[in-house]
Each structure stands twice: as C-alpha cells, then as structure tokens.
Length: 323
Ligand SMILES: COc1ccc(NC(=O)[C@H](C)Nc2nc3c(cnn3-c3ccccc3C)c(=O)[nH]2)cc1
Image 1 (cartoon, rainbow, N blue to C red):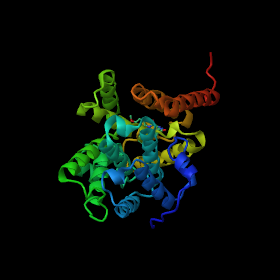
Image 2: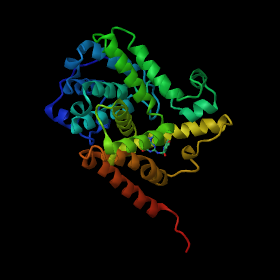
Image 3: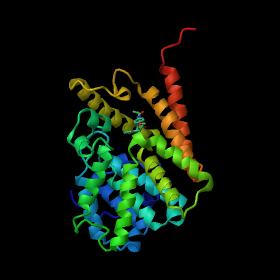
Image 4: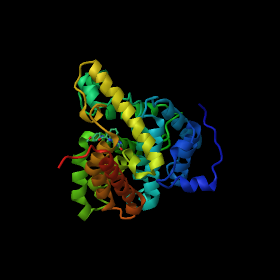
C-alpha cells in the first residue's frame, strides 16, 4: 500500500467533520489521506512541526500494524479517529483543553487498537496467552496497542514528534499511554463515575480534570458506532458479532469459559444492543453531553434514537409473553 495523495473535494472535507460520515464508501488508501486531512485541518503539523512526509510514513506504518480481523481492524481505527475529529471540531477542543491534548487524543485514536488479535482481554487472561503473561493480566491488549505505537515512533522516519523537545515528547507519551489504556472496557464504570464527579466544578487548569475528560472522549469515540446512521452502524455490529462469535467458538473448542455476551446461542442483536446502549453507551454519552452541550444534537440524540429503534425491534421480535 502506498500513500496516494488524492485531492479531496470541499464537500468531502465538509462530510469528514460529521458523525454521519460513511466510512464504507472509502478505500484503505483514501482513509489514509482523510486522516492526513484531519491533522491538517486541526493545524497540528504547523503547531507541532510535523513534516508531512513523516506523517504519511507514520500513517502507512500504522496501517500495516492493524490486523485483518472482522472488527478491530484499520477501518475501525479510522472510524474512531474520525469521530474524535468531528467532536474536536464541534466543541473547538483546542480552545477548551489545548492543542497538545488535541494532538494526543487524535494520535491515541489512530494507535488505540494496534495489532489487535481479534480476541479480547477475557480470552487473553483465561488462555494465559503471551500478552497476558507479558502484562500480568493487566489490560494486556491495551498495553500491547500502546507499546506497538511507541515502537513505530522509535523509527525516525515515522516519528511525527521528532522535531519536538524531549520534555514535549514525554508529555505526549504520558498522555497517549493514559488515553489508550483508558479504552479497556473493564475500567468503564471507574472512568465514567470519576468524570461525572468533576463535571460540576471542572477546571481546565486542573490536570486530573483534563485527563478524565480526555479518557471519556476517547472512550466515546471508541464505542460510538451507534451514534452513526443505521446504514453505517449496522454493518459494524455484524463485524463485531463475527469477531465475538469467533472468540466464543474458540473458547468452546479450547474448553475455556465462554464470555456470556458473545455466545451465539445466547444473544440476539436487538436484545444485546438494548442492554449495551441502555446500560453502557447512553450513560457514557450523557455524561459527556453534560459537559459539552453542543454534542447532544450531534451524537447523543442519535444514540437515544438507536435505543428506541432496538427497543421497538426487541418488542416486535420477542416471543409473546403469556399473561
Ligand atoms: C463493560 O464491558 C463491555 C460491555 C458491553 C460489551 N459489548 C456488548 O454488550 C455488545 C456485544 N455490544 C456492543 N459492543 C460494542 C459496540 C461498540 N463497541 N463495542 C465493543 C466492542 C469491543 C469491546 C467492547 C465493546 C463495548 C456496540 O455497539 N455493541 C462489551 C464489553
């Protein structure tokens, strides 16, 4: 794969800022150009002295370090990054928490699932895989994604931060580690609850507050498929279930505990999405919406609509309850 610098139309650049953007219409090479465009529109190369050819090398190297698995592939990484870009533009994130935090968040999204094997932490730990042993069962996947990211950044030809001071690089590294590790869903409630606590008295000069906001932002971007139009979101659910069922089939073959919400005999799409959106996704989005009100019409209302849609689907398809 090459970096082909195709010219993007004005209309494409407009669409790129919206949660309605349809990733399915774009080839791998085009997604790389769109990711370059996100850095350019946020003026990150100018502000952080990022040479454009180094940025292209970085994006191509990242691309080659994602695996061809049903869900956690490069296209997922693009969707997460595009959602973060749309939110950053909508709330003018650089104004709110600074350019450096914006650079950290965009780059963390790009790297957040690097070299994902398609088998989640529960499997890694139960099967005592190489990653579980290396990271002592502590967020093995997220630790690995982050480690792969900084291996890529060790190569001067791909190090987009190479013109920054050691001090600046240290701050970026610390921020990326925090953001990527925050995508471990096992920490979901801990992060959402801590964020809810600081919202009423949020202080943009308080590092802890800014860190919590950054973790919530990347979490929102990471699981935001249902904030998109149905024709964009639905295929992602099929990809996700394909990956989950592959894992539960393997767990059954290997005599490992089968993760309940992945068992093809146990779940239906409407029922699992109802509980996921109602119990996990909407509370997370509402917490962010309580801080950035401008995100409500953009991504939170679409999630409420998706919940409504799956509830109706669930009623229509549930076996009739005998009174
Ligand atoms: C608290 O940890 C959890 C909670 C829920 C889930 N997943 C689910 O409940 C089901 C399978 N649905 C689901 N899971 C989703 C979506 C988007 N990302 N995502 C996902 C993917 C991989 C790992 C974790 C999650 C939440 C989505 O739209 N639906 C997975 C982990």
